[in-house]
Image 1 (spheres, rainbow, N blue to C red):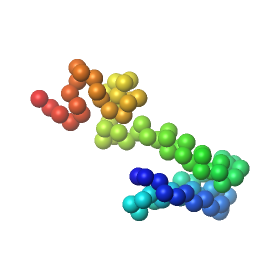
Image 2: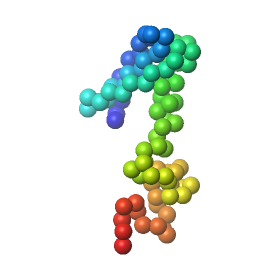
Image 3: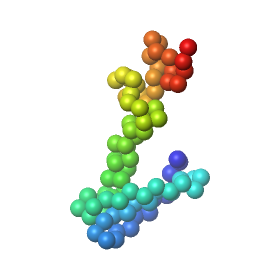
Image 4: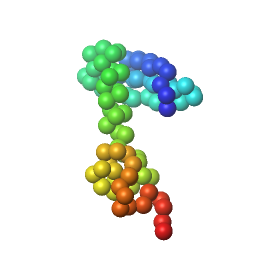
Length: 87
């Protein structure tokens, strides 16, 4: 998703941060009111939350094969075949 725009609204004692992608994608992050003091803070906090989530959901929901794999989001160790390849 390539982000084009972010829109922030404050309603029901919460921040709603909508991110819009160039292919029509939309992602909404809902933050408690206390999580941000301004719209800019809400966008920053929502981005932080998305970054924290990126290690999850890789490898089809399976855990990383090793520490390098978890940090690189891919397995490039010479001693192991690529994910999903069986010999």
